[in-house]
Length: 435
Image 1: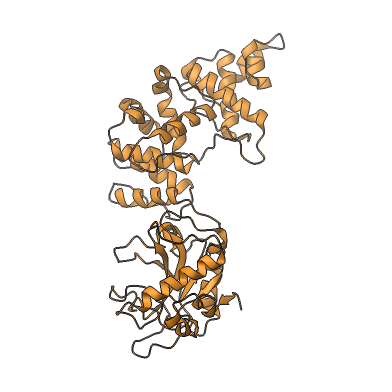
Image 2: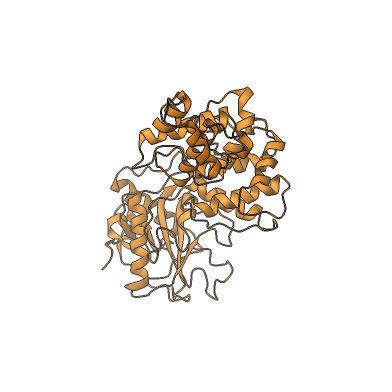
């Protein structure tokens, strides 16, 4: 058996004395209603937090909470006098039997049919001992994954591939922070790779950008899995283009988008368009910075994150200068480039990367040059930045700098010869240290 399921007696002992025997006994079949859970599972949580709710510090806390759930459900006249959920999972990763393999009543049975199946008649319900705003533990997610696999492959009544949030076609916040996982392909889906925790703020960005710009010309949806990637930042790029009046939108931050940001000439602290602010906050979250959780508000967290990004890119955030660099920063936000040292990154390479940005993008302002990543990894983008820096230092005109080692660059280097090099060429480019 894939999982260990704690039977009802483990929590039933905490039920009121007059209900204890029933709570501890195996679940009785519901003979009055149809039951064939071939559809899949619904994911639930315990609901918004209240001052009197239990914490889940110990396993006894968890079992007492399940007994509280049982008592409330038993006394609800709309059910068959039992706990509503089939199974419950605690933050410690323990799985508890509720209605078990018998029909439960937690999925809003009056809702629309799903593939011809009733929500209670055709689906299991699995409730997390999790309150509003609380995040699931890895043990909880692993147990969800194992339990779903068990229900698909081993259970006496086996289920299908649907993984749905309680809110599916129903007006509820349930399952809270588990929404990102309550879908096929997520980390709790045993048919998909285990990917660990998702980011609820990236997930919120993905949901919002897909819903808001679905009808924007050219828009391409991104996956809503709470993990960033090119598909997400390119969808945010299209959202940015739409807000700046570019149509149709395309999945590229090209010269037209750069010029549109430049023409708007407005830092987010002065921005009045709530959608643009939300795009910037979303992009910061996707890049791993903590921004405002009121997504359409540019708050203190957002400003701190932006200034940190400037610093990570080797730039100084100064009011009179930052407007000139703002289009470069926006372009960096709409890419997967990293500006913090990554595993296996080299701090010396990172110092070179920051120097390229500070001297040749912000200082000199080479027109063809964008910010290079500052992740400590020597990449093609860094190599091209090097080449542009060399071209500038050997005297190639700004508008002719292109980052390619062509005849003009070769001739320029021959002109420098083997004599004493200028400080910027020798130290900034060849040695990679600040001049």
